Amino acid sequence: MKSINVLNIIDCHLSVTMNWLERLLLQSSPKVNHFVFAKYFLKGTKSEFVPINKSILQVSYPIPLHQKIQRSLSDHTLRRELRSLVLSKMFEVVHVHFGHVALEFVDLLLEMKVKIFISLYGFDYEYLIQQNPEIRDKYVHFAKSGCHFIVEGNYSTKLLISYGVPATLIHKVHLLFPFAGGISKPIHWFKPIKLIQAASYTEKKGQDILVEALRLKNRNLFSVNFYGEQVEKDYFKSLTAAVNDQTLSNISINDHIPFLDYQKKLSQAHIAVSLSHKASSGDTEGGCPVFIRDALFYGKPVLTTFHCDIPDLFVHSYNSWMIRENDVQDASEALDEISFLSSRDYQRMAWQAMESVHSKSNSSGNELIDVYSSLL
Image (cartoon, rainbow, N blue to C red; front, side, top):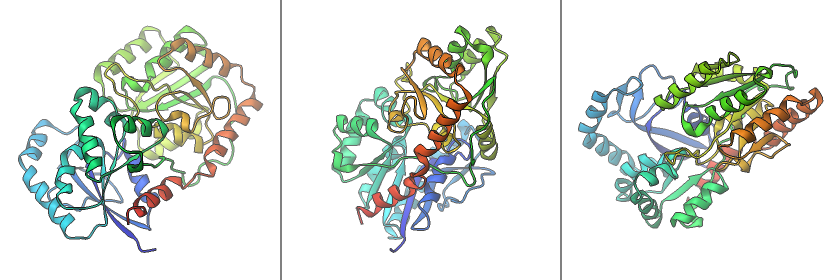
């Protein structure tokens, strides 16, 4: 099979919080030759995919306002270079990542009669549309113009269909990424039970639900490590205040960490947690957090919710404890159940966590290759 050349269009490759995107592209290599076109490039970023466009703007993170203005003023140069690259016929496929990036570039791409895939993540599904209902019409317009959409699972598929996107134009690519090495057996079961969550500090991630559940009961039976980027400052401030106010010394709130440290911390925990729910702003996961998928490869059972595409992979009492969204009492009861686990029961669930993803260890790469090939 001849390798497929794909131009991936992104906003900014965030090497820490978006390492999953690089892992997705790597998993489909070498059958796919991936190239990246980006608006911004973070100084000091080490990546397998250095953007190919000369008009890129090197920035620090968070991106300062003056550099965003600079980018806006040079938008015509960026778009001219994108047009030139696409018209060069170097690429069989153009893959646009994130809905807001599609809104910026897809109309230009449609002028050039190129095969287009749009991957939606997180806030693309509901938050953007709640902020501006016309975006739903834009998604439908892209579909009617021949664009195909890539989503993560059943919930996201049904949501796009409800918007008016034909099912024939929607493809699933599950973000499952095995680790080199991984672990060979679960860790020993002991107390305090070590919980971990690696996620941006935002309302939809539900760190506050876990804190409140521990406040109700069993706080001394668990230790919790949160890792993530402070995306919603007010939420982070409130979360920190709640931990300090309740003198929950067993809960540690940390900044985001490098990928190798992330792997190490995950391997040392007993259980991964993601109490995802629809935020008051309308923001959702859209799909399923990559963090809890990663946890399964490390043999970590997961405490999570029936949110978006999470139920596609997680089964209650098999590889997870599934609870209702935004329900402190339900979370507290699940923690109570976990606290009474025997070592044998924990080991069983840990093995089942690994088994649930073992056969799917390269599914993302293969799914992406199949999706591209379906149009060629």
